[in-house]
Length: 265
Image 1 (cartoon, rainbow, N blue to C red):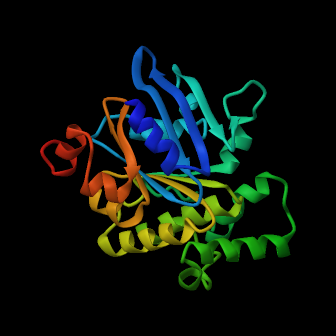
Image 2: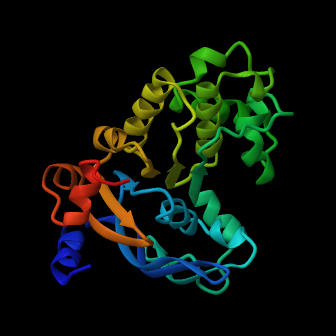
């Protein structure tokens, strides 16, 4: 990335929530992320786009220390959350994951748990057992996920009994229940129909008022619709990063333009 691009990033992402500095990641000997330095703006949606295999999912998994859960995976460089390196010695990765929540590509509600217990599960792990307090948080989280009105009479039913789109919103509610500061979404709509996708996109735009959201998507139309900033990745590197409007309407890098216009992908 050029010095001019780096300067533009600093100007466009003042008030950043997460910043990576020379971030590298490996699976065994395979070097999948290469010297990524990126600032993610607070209370905004940042989309990560690029062809399959370019490192998008690995990148966001590094933002909450999930990459290290893979055997033989390792990371170098820094990931700063509010200016503090989450990879510093003594930092509890579980505490990091509470602050930086993750929603996965495929909805993954706990199948043996009810809708209520799915949402409350993270809180119970922290030791909260007060039913009245749990009731308040469960309702609030389901409301934030635009799901309360659809499930309020079925809270005792299995989370797995919901439709695919409802399951994904249930997983989002489960993430929100522990009050994260950042919400990472890895292709959250890829397994959903257009109607369910529209609800998730509506939810994203609501969440950015109170959360920092980073979404990985193959759907460039989705990135254009919902995100404020967009990073284009290719072969483990960030080729270009800027406001979504600039990236889609006036990309500065020829490779970005070729990807946006569908000449490769």
